[in-house]
Image (cartoon, rainbow, N blue to C red; front, side, top):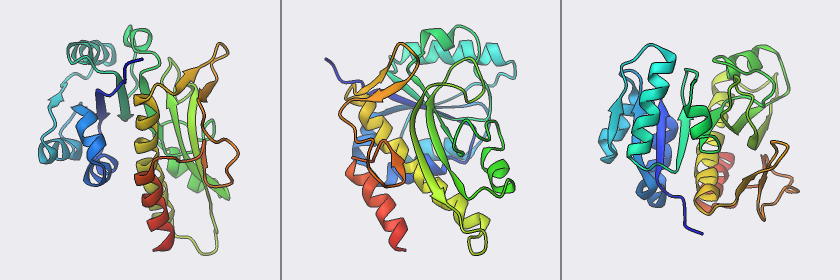
Length: 227
């Protein structure tokens, strides 16, 4: 089975996760072939810094944007698309690229979907926050879950900015790990829409389920824990 290692990022953010990962993992740098944005944003600067091809789609209409994105991804023979994106995709791309569109969301879905995932979670006073990686479907943050990562919050001691940074580092680690699993054809969507990562560890007591295997991702999380 051939490897799936032509990746794209779709972003409307500062590109902080992308930059953090590109700085630390040369293998991911080799696999990333394209950065797509819908506005002037930091992710464009990151693409230029690392010499990654960048395309901006100046299209406000959701379906027109989605159709143009589909055309570009097809032209570039992209295997998987990682989204750090504030808009919803629609139209044929959801079927044509189903199982290849992967979203990174800063909450423990199904709790707190939408644009304010982290903020809504923080405002809820929940003692458990975190992040979710999932396939994109026709809903809002409703697609099959690939990986979750949890943070226990001490409401008396933890600052909002500190918790958000920990979730940021979770998302960096998840991007490395999920892209690695995907490139090795280890992510499988079952008939019921459930996701299994072949030969992954689902019994680890750490923050990530399935557990992290990628050594760069593990080092990243360990360094954050020791700081």
